[in-house]
Image 1 (cartoon, rainbow, N blue to C red):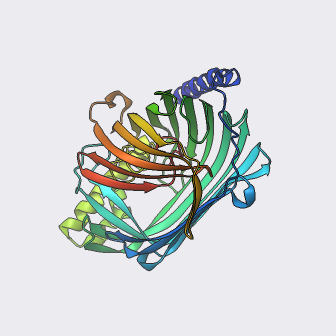
Image 2: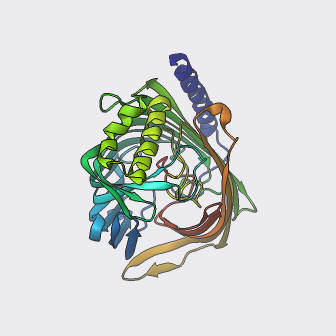
Image 3: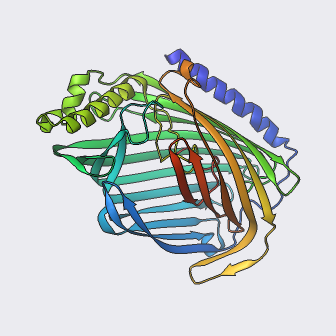
Amino acid sequence: MKRRVCITLLRAILICWLLSSLAMASPFERRRDQFQNTLGFLFLPFPYVIPGVGEGFFLVGSVNNVLETPTDVLLLGFTGDAEGYFGLIDELFIVPDFIYLSVSQGTAARFGQNVYSSRGMDSEKEDFDIFVGEDFKFSSYEVVFTLLERRLELTYGVEINDGQFVEIRDFEGELIQDLEDPIEVESSQTHFQVELDITDDYNDPRSGLNFRAVQEHFPAQNDGDPSYNTITQAATLYIPIPDENTWLFHYYRSEAIVLETGNIDLESLQEEQGFSDCDGDEACESAILASAQNQLNANQNGTARSLGGPDRLRSYPLNRYQAAQAQLYGTEFRWNFNKGGDSIDLFFFEDVIDSLQAAFFIEQGSVVEEAVDLGSITRSSYGVGFRFVGQSGAVYRIELAAGDEGTELIAFFEYPWGGTFDS
């Protein structure tokens, strides 16, 4: 196993070394300054209805390039049943144009996690129960070194999450069982990421190549938990068609490498999750059995980055498909039908148009437990979208994605495929 980890790391290091050599001699000149200072902001309220969790409103507050610096601030405030907040401060430079920090924190009074009947891609759309939790807390801290006009970035970070599950509900949100002994949810990870951006622009690339590789370490939190690493790599090729429009080709691969196997006794895992509290209720026992079996697979194989959500395999909910191995191919055409230059100044929104864009995309992904099975079962997404690309660096996008389980309407604040590895 250690030999496999070393081989994987050496392969990633070799790729990074080759691409960094290309970056230093890149033919793709940046078409503008990579550290923007144009002010942009957005403040909007939205209602939410989350099955099993509740309903209410959240307020989005986003400010880009605070005080004519590259620093961006995002705040989501929640009211109602899931009362809480999520806050992000990004590109807070401590050494100008060289070292910056990214810090995010959040809380939620209630949260939900869909637990499907199995990991991988064998489950059906409504084949899940909702484990509802309370007192969720999240924090993430990153330090980033950026070089060569943002062509090379090195990131080290830490992430911590905790909460507790207190209820089990069916896929429609109806109560199945209160858990007398809440299930504690704890996780932490450290990560190191290398990004090589051999394109004409860091924020809105139209030609060139972007490559990212990240290694994450998930230590065991308690007795019976696994300890494992994930290696995730993503590459996106940008082809200008002609100069103002772009055709993208994207490849994504994530794999878990177990360092220490966790508890793989199914009966004890069921008891840990409250099987005895079911008192013979069939729906309750079925939900806990599925959750325990998924936990057994996670303890034995680890968990790679998931597919589903606004970043990859967009017609499916966030974290829809999880297992030890994940892979995705995608292509997207971006038509820039407005070259920008106009200012928008409203009481809730301000920015300068860099471009208005229509997008057409297709994605196909595979999620399995064993690498040899990748591609044996796949799911696809396709759709269209509209993007407002601002000179502040913000990208506002609305998309409609379709797939085997219906459609998803997506409203998000960055390009797909090029953000973090959080989906």
